[in-house]
Image 1 (cartoon, rainbow, N blue to C red):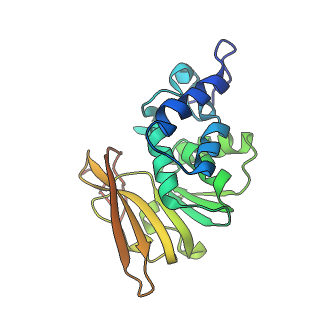
Image 2: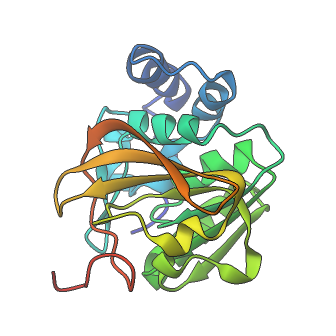
Length: 225
């Protein structure tokens, strides 16, 4: 998959504005910083050139390696649930295309992101560097282990569906930190936010039904499940 070049026949700025108006604002996203980030970050940089016409459509898109770039609304909702103010240290599990990473990097102080698949990590790094988002650290590995050497985190975002909330990730939150993760079956999940309490436990809130690829790893799904 090549990082796409702008199609001279398509005005991506207009398409991005329309995406925010019809998909983000219309569905109730109200965090002004999230809205501004969705307007600013060029989603087309993170998809294959052949799919550039679909970049700002209301759907997820394939990015290779049997993975997808999430629907714009889901990116906005998950980001809003993290309640970022600008000074946070954020961990992302599942770098994928790098688009969600770019949104987080626009809104937080530092982003640490773990991707299981090296080809995706390399493509994401190239796309992020092209936008000069230099506050992102990418590592290839099992994201379900988190990034213990950099913990604790103010927020953790998981971009794949887990059978249950990995306690390894809750343990890497600071007190008051938020973990947003899809939890459920192999094909359908519920978006969950877990806030770490002073005693180390997590207070759980549920959001909406969703569909994500499986979170593969030691504390998620096995690769062949």
